[in-house]
Length: 264
Image (cartoon, rainbow, N blue to C red; front, side, top):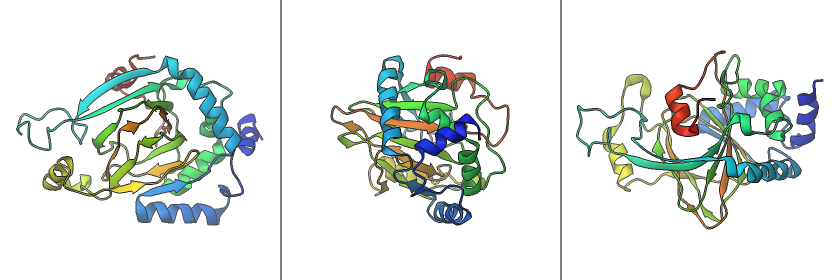
């Protein structure tokens, strides 16, 4: 067993989440395939989440804060449509972020991310042959901070899956809302009419209940989603564990400058 395997055994709630067991993996995959989302509550031991939270609070002063206006498709402005069209209507996302190079080397979060056992589990559930870390030193592990009033606006993901770990819930707000199968990206069906209704507040999304220590696997390429504004003094803190299905992939320089404020 390597050091990360030993560390994983001391941080993972194996009683509730036996990630080696084929039956457990199959159950997780079935839920994700059925619902498009999988919430694994108390995935890490309470002590592990507490240590990750303490690290995140210590590093928060290093966070790069930004406010971005974007359309729900995360695409450039399209001159073929007016500003009022859902293709060009903008929403706001605002948060702070620290990057992989700012996460302590001995962090439980890094032990989880680097664990081959954890990666094998993810491959089974996500139906991927292999998962690789980003080939730049910023993008693999990120920690997001949403202070009062900060939010993640409605959008579809560019990637086929997202993996997050909730580190700290806010006092109120900060709710994950989504509507599954809201477009068909394979058929280039962007569902403009219903997207416009949603942006205008005429649709009722589902809400995802998450507690501190919840690991969430989400398929957001065709499921529109957002995180509502944080309410209260307690910062919403979330880790994004980003992998690629191919080796040697770097996040684009423009994306790194937008979200991290630096290239390396």
